[in-house]
Image (cartoon, rainbow, N blue to C red; front, side):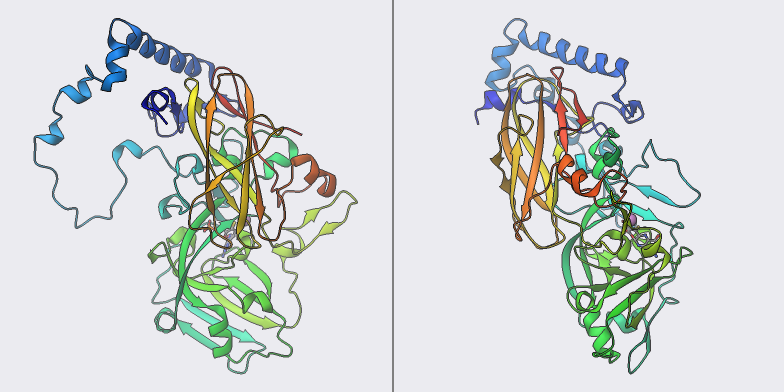
Length: 452
Ligand SMILES: Nc1nc2c(c(=O)[nH]1)N[C@H]1C(S)=C(S)[C@@H](COP(=O)(O)O)O[C@H]1N2
Ligand SMILES: [Mo]
């Protein structure tokens, strides 16, 4: 890529973290408001005009001579910087303070029951910073005193046990990177509601390194009944009576009773001091503030698996226990709410994941699904973890639609929305893993559309 191309590729990366703080409030359910759109375009045209006048363009191409940001030595190069910040937890730059978890403008808040979405459009790589990890609480979050927290294993076990946090943290631990996705992620798209940005369409998704003791170690420690113990029930300590059934083969496989997230203790809103990590399975089974696991011989059919978290099928039947988050991907940049300021080179980047294993391949279309090219996947590519993909693209300035399509190592191909609707109908909330389409208008504005 030449410098020339590099310079023409201009993109407003994320509504939250560029130009000014006010913009985030100006995004409506229909995208940028008219006034804002006009302003952005005018400022860009003004900047281009200034560049084109006289010799400015030639100078700029030669290395930005005339740029005061190069000519004038800035204060930070001439003065003493700040001392180490030993007494405070580190925070992002003040120029990044608009990149936040947000509640959807379209969803009304019901008491403490709430969702905040991760700002996927502003994140790099595969790890979600802990302060930006999405949240889903059925009955609000608590900051629980770890010295008072107890974790019990009972039911079909020889030795029922109660563990303190100290007991647990002495046991052999593992650290693994996994995605967590709420089963209701991308739910609005079932009904053809084009939410305004990838934060709201796909932001109930995060990925962290989790640390804890494998549940298999604890079940063995309690002498679970290998003959009759077919399921476990996981229970949280909050007021939502969150209880979920998990079959014993999964429980003995890669499930972790975790206290660590991204190298430190879990954040209170993500289940401090203890949560279940159930790789590949929908978020609701990742019980937070975990206080009890019971071993049983049948599925428990609790409220959160008999009434909620069921899928309404076209024939009127309800599908139960659809735990796995199937193979899915989304382009995070450019994505709805962002704006391409002129034609030229762009790196299209996004995320792919599968609850069944590793991502095998990601294809990208820049012409509404007619042609597909294989994207570059960044290492590491891990099972039940986010995979970052990138692909080069030169936008010629004409309107188009961009999409990504992931394939996992079982050979499963992420479906189009109409393929998914043919099987699942339109009355579902959960498990929408359809291909996402972003429309690029001639103005450079990116918006959410459905393409069949
Ligand atoms: N105890 C308890 N566990 C819970 C919940 C809850 O409300 N209470 N919400 C569940 C749901 S629906 C999801 S999607 C995930 C969200 O995890 P996070 O808030 O760490 O992103 O936690 C799950 N575990
Ligand atoms: Mo969820």
